[in-house]
Image (tube, rainbow, N blue to C red; front, side, top):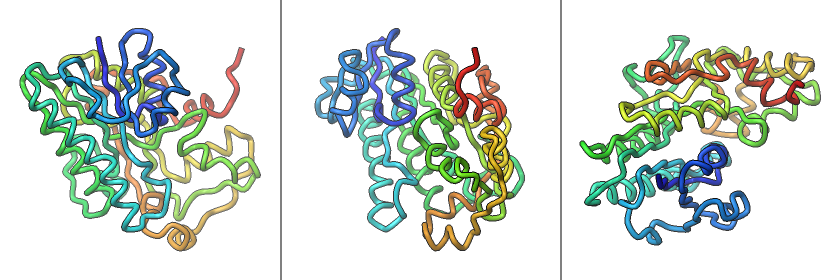
Length: 302
């Protein structure tokens, strides 16, 4: 089976390709072709643009993970545009190719994020929850999903994966969080009561693989672990796993001053449950945050 994967050099993409490359013929579409070559060598084909693809019909599946890091920089008007276009443009182009193909791919798996739900209180949300949000993250994800779902047809099933904060042994959000904890200066952000919906890297890769091989799967799925926690509990658990003190608190006003609108992603949250993901038969390897953090932060036990 031939797969087309966009965003293959990102955190999730790299782990996904490493898991699938022995069983599938993979073409990686990336904005940084040399990085893909450095990561995967000759085990995958690397393309720099969709124009290099002869026909989308050559692929049995398309997995779309491409996008500018949403928390990499302060949200200026220009950065917001970069974040939007890095997701919307490629998704629109892939959908148009799928719609026009005589023999389209059987499945199109496209990324999204739990930001689509907007800021929530302590009431858990699932894939079927009503959404009433009006912020940048929601509009970004809502349009991203609309563009992907337009590819749905009797010949192509579309799965949209709303991903939470991905915890990985190297890189990603966890690497940015660790420095104060390693110094014994860890603590929650803001009030700490906001929901923190997370997922371990092995599980987000596992969900994508599950959606790929199960032909009955289509529609919206939450890429979050089944036990979301408060930001304070997440913070305490990092300190516990590292055996470090936990007494500092980063006040909300400091984050708002430093990050501007981007701070809303840290100071508000939601408790997102993977109801449809579990109903589809996926079994989580890391259902609890302590188990996930131990896998990421501690050396493997003998």
